[in-house]
Amino acid sequence: MSEAVTRESMAYDVVIVGGGPAGLAAAIRLKQLDTEISVCLLEKGSEIGAHILSGAVLDPKALTELIPNWKDKGAPVETAVTQDRFWFFTQSAAIALPHILFPPLMSNRGNFIVSLSNLCKWLGQQAEALGVEIYPGFPAHDLIIEDGVVKGVITGDLGVAKDGHHKDGYTPGMELRAKYTLFAEGARGSLSKQLGEKFGLHDGREPQKFGIGLKELWELPAAQHQKGLVLHGMGWPLNNDTGGGLFMYHWGDNFCSIGFVVHLNYKNPWLDPFGEFQRAKTHPAIAKILASGKRIGYGARAITEGGTQSVPKLSFPGGALIGCAAGFVNLPRIKGSHNAMKTGMLAADAAAGAIKAGRAGDTLEDYDRAYAQSWVAKDLYLVRNAKPLWSRLGSLLALPFIGLDMWTNQLFGFSLFGTLGHGEPDFATLSPAAGSIKIAYPKPDGILTFDRASSVFLSGTNHEEDQPVHLRLRDPAIPISVNLPEYGEPAQRYCPAGVYEVIEESTGPRFQINAQNCVHCKTCDIKDPAQNITWVTPEGGGGPNYTNM
Ligand SMILES: Cc1cc2nc3c(=O)[nH]c(=O)nc-3n(C[C@H](O)[C@H](O)[C@H](O)COP(=O)(O)OP(=O)(O)OC[C@H]3O[C@@H](n4cnc5c(N)ncnc54)[C@H](O)[C@@H]3O)c2cc1C
Ligand code: SF4
Image 1 (tube, rainbow, N blue to C red):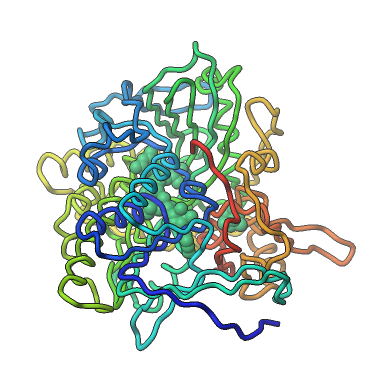
Image 2: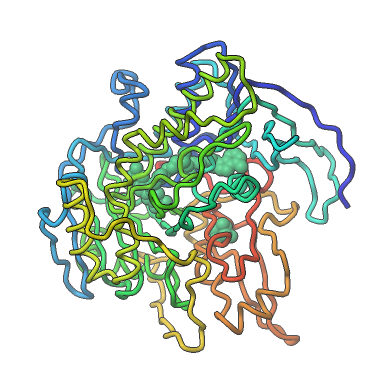
């Protein structure tokens, strides 16, 4: 039973939800523009960077605009890209694709291999030095909307038991009110999703598309480490109908970030993205590099893939979406952090201008206009057909067409295809389990390939166990009565953390949710075919604790 609570309330000029590149860039920019503007930033992770998972090859364009002397200030951006390779995998061969296939926009010259988690920690320090109030371990759980205007957010309560009663030490969440609230929750933000529905932000746009990105951090023996190497691959183990691919980045003294993205419009409900990633590492060309190395980190996170066609209306009364909460990833470049930072800065410009003019709670149309004129919009426009072509043609045929389309766009500013749509949202693409081919994944060897349990352990994931389940089922019967017979309950496979299980009991199958394992990737909220799962923020500080990710 929930009990009536009285909440404390604090007021700021701007409240920012999320301490990723978008939220931190917005916070820094606001203070650079006017030190008098009061800025509060909430982060659900135990510290800034704890929930940040990315590749990451950084295009430093936005960082340089924000903090031109980032090098002198000691930003953890140290490994310059020295080799840029693209491979097409068959089961036994790795075929190097020529650079000429892709236009210059795809080049990684001038880019850096980083840990985005570490970069965010550093950005957090810069923001605090400018006077931004940062509260890690405080998720924004609810919206405050009054008279159709977003007035701020309410942080999550602490000390609520699984059954809803208040435990000893219960502390109600606070109301944080603001003239403008910027939502920087990243891909599939829980409040951003509500805002999209409430204000019709996606009306007239193509549905947002997503991938699930899984990543491991390895330490390699010196002889196998090629500092500055960027390697992207597609093809095996995915079949032609399933989009995605592998990335491998060598950085620091001996770190190797290796990851795998599976586009969430995949059709076969038996597909297991985690299993595909494990298989990808067994390719001879990859296994050779990882041999005698040690896996030291694991995580997963959804990535936006819809591009320009899916960018929603960005502002609404009292606030705006920034970064991947709106979705600004350039899919063929697999880069979104520069665009996340830049959109944070553009929204900050608009909010600071409005506050200076004495406004509050109105719609920051200046931000929508600035985005439309920005290099972010151009960045996305040039590659707008990559995802639709990939979805329509399959990986093999799409590759030359995507290359041709990006070339004509970059050289002549036009596309033979105009602007293609995405079609169905990702939750609607599964085929029935009955007619789909079952995929047999090899058993992990514990050296090169691993199981989910040991992987989640490496992510440092931790949640208070006695709290309400943060994966809410609209109808608890659906997993067993609908999803199991139709699709073999795919949540058992698409969840990279083993949160969802179907347990066979004498009374029949039972759906179990191991919420404490959740790494906050948001895939279930996106891919559940019945759209029955809603991810909400758990108690503050819960979730992964990523290091060097
Ligand atoms: C596997 C993978 C590889 C990638 N590789 C690259 C790459 O090589 N180069 C590149 O440029 N981009 C890459 N990207 C994309 C890039 O990571 C994103 O574009 C970028 O992180 C988006 O930044 P953001 O600030 O919008 O969101 P995020 O980085 O997702 O940050 C959001 C933050 O908000 C917090 N948060 C969310 N909801 C709440 C809430 N309600 N209350 C409080 N806090 C909240 C989260 O904990 C998180 O810290 C990759 C992404 C993935 C998944
Ligand atoms: S429960 Fe959902 S959000 Fe959590 S790890 Fe699994 S798929 Fe990701």
